[in-house]
Amino acid sequence: MIKNWDKMKVYDLTQNTSHLSPPWPTYEPLQVKFFKRLSPNGANGMLITTSNHVGTHLDGPLHFDTPGRDIASLEMDKLMGPGVVVDLSDIAEDWSIYTPQDIMDRVEVKTGDIIYINTGYHRYGFDQPEADERRYMLRHPGPSMDFVEFCRDMKIKHLAVDCGSADHPMNTKIRDWEPAEALACDKFMKERYGKALDEIYHWPDTYQAMHVMLFPKPWECIHAENIGGEIDKVLNKRLILGTLPWKFQYGESAFCRCIAIDEAE
Image (cartoon, rainbow, N blue to C red; front, side, top):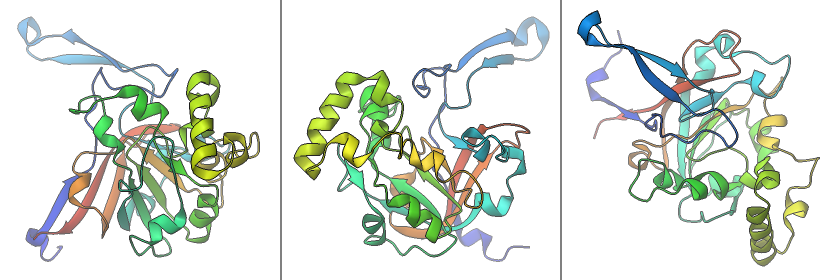
């Protein structure tokens, strides 16, 4: 029996999911319909068609690694444990870059931690007062290239981010799909960092580094995307964090619930 459970508080860091949730660009959106209703069937039943990359979801190793493990193979110890929720919203702006030092300036990261990153861009989610789907998906901040080594060196169990991707959006296929956005980002990078977009994220060497370079063994540093919910209540704190997907055999990713457990005030 867990002692002092009555002194614990569980926070839900999951975004709402509905047919209005934007999928990852070019992916199948979530569609839902009733196939039976209470009258005359005595129960309501729904049929759902969707890709896995809609709303709050966990990318598993198999998503970017052919021999990678599926969601069902992931140990609970990898999905839940001590970690930090770090707030980077004070330095976040469209297309900005955050670094390992930005993380460590705000929280103490320990070997084997789970890290949840708050850029503040969850406020642009589809059901929020400031909803802006293009800003949320195409212009959110992303990590510097040394973030990969940081995660490897610290043996980070997994990450979670409150935006469309754990990679910078212009280090994904969005760079090809949205050339006007890529040009605007390139201009921003030159003005802010003194380097062109392709100098900072040089393709093909760095393409989707947070996926390609972290998902394979021995690191298996996977991540959840599109978190939010009550994240603003637990910023810059050490807590017990949990990313809880359904036990999807042969699944490369899965919808999940993200939670933080803290001592009640």
